[in-house]
Amino acid sequence: MKILYFAWVRERVGKTEETVEPPAHVRTVGELVAWLAARGEEYAYAFENPKVIRAAIDRTHAKPETALGAAREIAFFPPMTGG
Amino acid sequence: MGTVRLQREDFDAAAEQRRLCEARLDVGAVVTFTGICRGGEGADAISAMTLEHYPGMAEDEIARHVAEAEARWDLKGVTVIHRYGRLIPGENIVLVATASAHRADAFAAAEFLMDYLKTSAPFWKNEERREGGRWVEARSEDDAAAARWQPPSRSREAAE
Image (cartoon, rainbow over the protein chains, first blue to last red):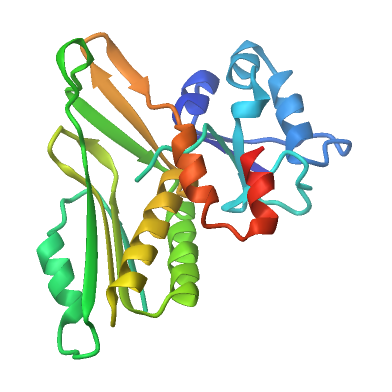
């Protein structure tokens, strides 16, 4: 699946997007965050406080408990500050 | 019916307002809201602000809320324009314009749309100061403002 990062999550991870293949036991957004956080120092830093991380599955807001299902594109970002 | 545009370029609020009323006699009220980049003062002065967005999702998310506004209020037209990229203080950031037969619908829909743009449209502001760039933190007041538009059964969940 394709993962996109925005704002300071992007800066901390050090990339705008990447393709990953998480293992089958990673079934929800929250589990994906935990799996990503264990991939290295930069990921641990980006996801150090999962409570402030927001996510979208295929361009729709998702919660930590949302199932990944057949998601093609998952995005992680801080709380939004538009308007 | 609504118009949603994301763009780097500036917009002309007066021209957008004219477009909403053009060639129609059923519009009795237009509310336009323009959000402008603040400059800050003294040590907190901002030299520029960069708006990052999630292309694709930003348009979808705004269009969803425009459709919801159209379902909740009797609107004759809606225009939302949100800029992205680097802006300097004094520049326009966002325009919400709503047209209706009577003022209450236009006022309520404009406020609803702004409250949702603040909390659910995927945009992030980075302010440039003398010491460097800093990401703007989300404000709990903005979450509270958006939560008041939710039906009672959902407002408790949103407050958590």
